[in-house]
Amino acid sequence: MIEIKVEGLAKEYRSESGVVSVLNDLQLVAPRGSVLSVEGASGSGKSTFLNIIGTLDFASKGHIFLNDVDLSVMQERARERFRSTELGFVFQQHNLLPDFTVLENVMMPVLIQRRPRKEARREAEEKLKMVGLEHRLDHYPAQVSGGELARAGVARALVGGKKMILADEPTGNLDRSNSEKLADLLFSLQKELGFTLLIVTHDGELAGRVPLRYRLRTGRLEQIV
Image 1 (cartoon, rainbow, N blue to C red):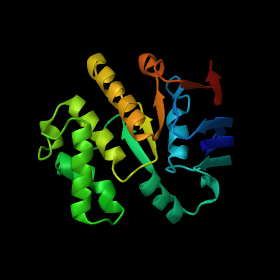
Image 2 (cartoon, rainbow, N blue to C red):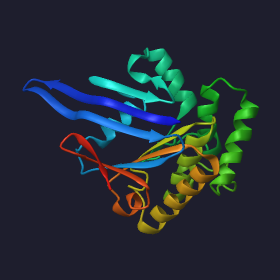
Image 3 (cartoon, rainbow, N blue to C red):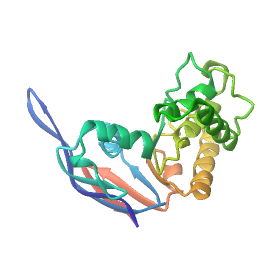
Image 4 (tube, rainbow, N blue to C red):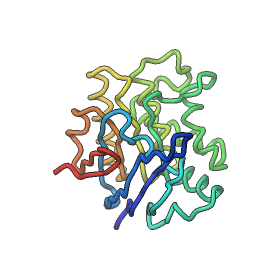
């Protein structure tokens, strides 16, 4: 079954100097449970593309189907609900809130779904154990290493039974050793849990491990064979 289908996707911005075209007529089809990457130089539109897939931004033209749902015709409230229940995000900066513990940070997506606090804690503890952070539950982000922050970000993306994980430069702030460990973790969890994994990256070594690779160049998406 198809998980991601992109048809004629385009994104334009208007400025005083005219219309700036960022993405042009993108086409993409990926089956459910696949692992794919979108590569490209800085400024090529990778993050814009990911934000549109993740319902954080709107396309100017075209359609995006995720799990047979056409995001391009959804109203904002429905998009927010879809995002909170179906999509998990892994960010380069991790984006953990500094005034909350690692456990509390990972619980938040479940609490946003209005599920009971006890249930949120149980699921967060389970996911933190899966990423090897069961000994860091009560630590604050400033008290853990960069590699541990990255793993906590993965745990947070997974809670709530997410069907698709969108990773935006997940190794961008890590040294090579921690980058390899995070990649190992992401691929292992994907194999175990079966979610669709879309990675946007300029890390050639990370992308080289992905079976379905695309490159954004001059606003167009091409498959790397």
